[in-house]
Image (cartoon, rainbow over all chains, first blue to last red; front, side, top):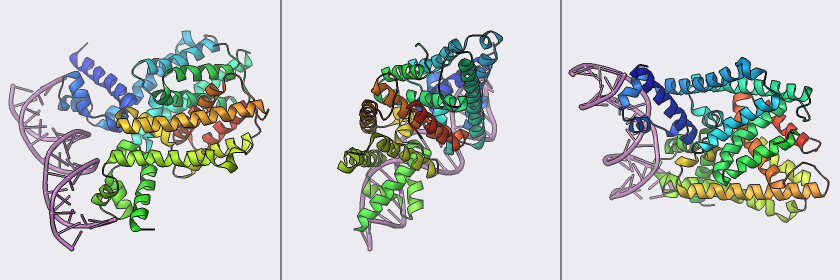
Length: 192
Length: 192
DNA sequence: GTCTATACCTTGATAGAC
DNA sequence: GTCTATCAAGGTATAGAC
C-alpha cells in the first residue's frame, strides 16, 4: 500500500474520531497534524478543504454500514442477532473514549455545516432508519420480538434513544448506556 | 427595569438560542453583537468571558426547570399532565427554528467545554433524570401508565429518546418528532 | 507527498475614552 | 453601560521548493 493511501486513511480515521469526540467545528487541522506528525499542508494535499474531509468521513461510515447490512451472510441472520450487532456499534463507540455516534454529533452542528455535508448525513440517517424499520417489522412478524405501533416509528424511537444514550452517558456515567440498552430490549419483549 | 438588566437578559436569551441552534463552539460574540446592535465590548461588560456566558445560560435553564417542577400548583397535577408539560418543552424547541435541547447540544461538545460548564450541565441533567424517574414511578404506582423494568432506566431512556428526537428531526423532518412522541406514549400505555 | 512560508480571516478579550 | 481601537492566538487555505 502506497504512503498516500496510509496517510490518507490515517487522516480519515483520526478525523472521524475527532468529529465524534469534539464535534466538526471544534477540531482543527492542528489536531490532526500534531497527532500524525505531519504538517498542515499535507492534510490539504489529501483533502483540499475541511468540507471535503467531512464529506469523506460521512461517506466512510455510510460505506461500512451499507456493506454490513447488505452482506449475504448477515442478511440471513436471525433478527435478534442483527439487532445485537447494531447495538454493538454504539457500545463500541462508548468504549473508544466516549464517542457519540456520527449522526448525533453532526446533527447538533447541522446548521453550521456545508450543504454537501448536510445532504450526506441525511442520506446516512435515512438508510439507517429504513434498515431498522424493516428489521423490526420482520422480527415482529416472525415472533422474535414485540411492540406496539408502526415499525418505522419504533425504529426511529430506538435510534433516537441510542444517539441520546451516548450523549447522556458522558454526563451521567457509562453504566447508563448499558441500562438504556437493557430498557430497549425490555420494551421489545426481548431477552437481553 | 434598568438598561443593564434588559441588555443582559437579551444577551442571555440570544446566547441560549445560539447554543441550541449552532452549538457552543460555533457561535461567536459577533453573532450576538450584530443581532442586538451592540458592540463586542458591551457583551464582555455583562459576561467577562464566554465561559461565564455559557455558565449563566445553563443556570437559567436549570432555574426555569427547578421553579416549574417545584411549583406547588404543578407538583399536585396528575402524572400524565406533568408528563405532557415536559414533552411540550421539546415541542417548543422544535417550533423555534429546530432548536435541539440544551443538554443534547452541550453533551456533543462536552469534551471541549470548560470544566465549570461541564459540571453545570451534569447537574442539570441529573436533576431532570431524577425528576422524571420519580414521576414515572408515581404514575406506575397510581396506575396512570405502565412499563417494565426500573423507573430510573425508563426515565433516562425517554429523555435520551427526546434529545435524539430533536436532532433526528433536523435530518428526517419535524413530523418524526411527533411520531417518536406518539411511540413513547404507546410504550407507556398512555393515550396520546 | 510532504515541506516551509505565508496570506488572510475570525475569534475572545482588554484598555481607556465618553 | 457602551463605545473605539487594538491585540494575540488560532483557524483554513495556498504557493512553490524539494
